[in-house]
Length: 182
Image (tube, rainbow, N blue to C red):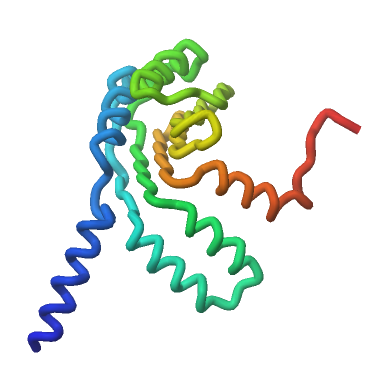
């Protein structure tokens, strides 16, 4: 019985130390700033983060799986330190999806020392991708903001982002097509 109690305590400590429960302060600050710039009401669908212990456990499942992409997935997972995800249902549509709204959302993230690398606005969706660099050669964090008429999705990825991008490009280079060129 003591062994079971010790095991439960160790598992709880591992979950708490790996941030597998809640998102970090920076994520919350950016989320609050973004929501403050949108004249709408939101309801949290879910919000969570997964840290190093969570990725270790996932990596173990991948290692014992019988998939062709196992090696590629393992290499990507080894480069991720943390991921924070928040999905919020949009209860009202007071703010029209526009480039002006996107500029306001960008200010929310840029104030937190993030650099925009992709901004796209369509009739039904705004998408922004921001990076935080360790130095000129190393991207250490990626933040994605997606706002549609139905929901707001925020994702913060921490790790060796440049290496993750390289791995994805290498593994999917056969499927990449550049449109507009013949």
